[in-house]
Length: 121
Image: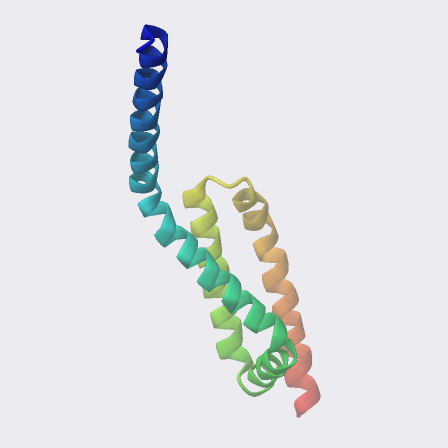
């Protein structure tokens, strides 16, 4: 047999073995990414559901604000603080801007609640 053909066959075999090893490595490394992608898919499905249910969710939020304004304000404050802590932990620059905007948002919400409470009586 031609030595050159034997050399090509051996080289082809080595390349095939390397490709198989690389595929196995890639599958092993991507195993952790799969769970992350599943979580992202679930989150995206939840956002899609919320978009489709936006009128119902908005109505429920307005009803909650109308019936329990103080509890809603407390919940909004807690969510805002949680968001700021999250942004701070992520190192996001929006955390500083949010900290500056928090007193403004708080005063606006308090004014709205006073007007709402004053118009109800």
